[in-house]
Image 1: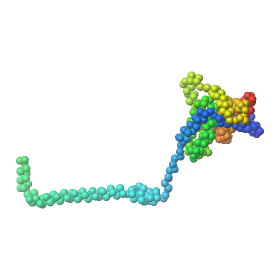
Image 2 (image 1 turned 90 degrees about the vertical axis):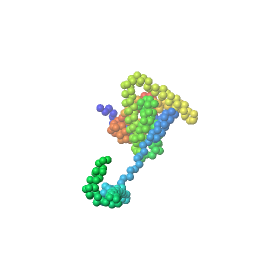
Image 3 (image 1 turned 120 degrees about the vertical axis):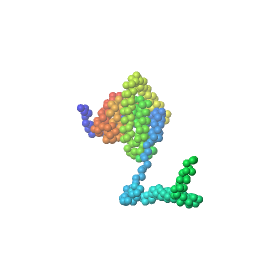
Image 4 (image 1 turned 45 degrees about the vertical axis):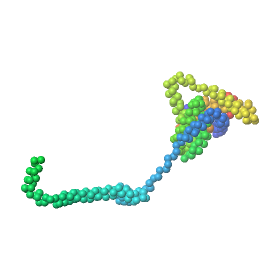
Length: 150
Length: 189
């Protein structure tokens, strides 16, 4: 149960004045704290300031723009930035290089296999033995019998 | 956002009152200094980027919480080492020492004020301090926040986590108690 009477306006004002006088006395007495305590408080303040939290740097947000359909669908980009086309072009360079590389390798392999066949053909044609000899059953038999003693 | 200078000025403006308020609660200078240091660090670490206008409220809240934490730690420590509490509480000597310092300090410079006036003033100050320290904690907190920190009723209620009506009641009771106690001692603030 509340035992405090509701103070009248006058009593309230008198109470406030009394409180102000009391706190004024406290303030004047507190102003001259001993040197060691003042120094400890100062050191605490410095320590706190050294660990002060700073506001994070403002984050630059990408401005939303209307996505142009198929702008660079092959790369999965939607052209959100002003330099979207340029970055899409730059991103396409590695892919182009890969395709070009595959084509070059393919051509080189074709060429080398053709060269190998040509070398075999050239060897057969320039040999002392005519190529028709290899289709002669007697010559084949001769090669087998001459090879078997070894 | 508060600049470093604003934060420094704010801490400078509240540190002495914060120390005294903690001292009235814990009655030990070292502990009061630790509490003030903790509260300053917490304010700077967690709220150093807040606007300067928000700092007083935040700090009062942090100071109250740090004081409560100290009491909780003390409770745990006392439960563990009950005999250690015998070593605490050399506060009476400290108060005498304060009186001597206040008495001898300004004596050199201020010729207009007699030694008797200075002693009388110091006596009033210590009398008031002693009575404030005797107030129930919630009344003392409400009284000091409302009139010493010059916070309004709503701010005090927010900092104390109670209703505005409770703040008014705490303050009025504190004033009544102080008034009676000081009158009985013959102290007129």
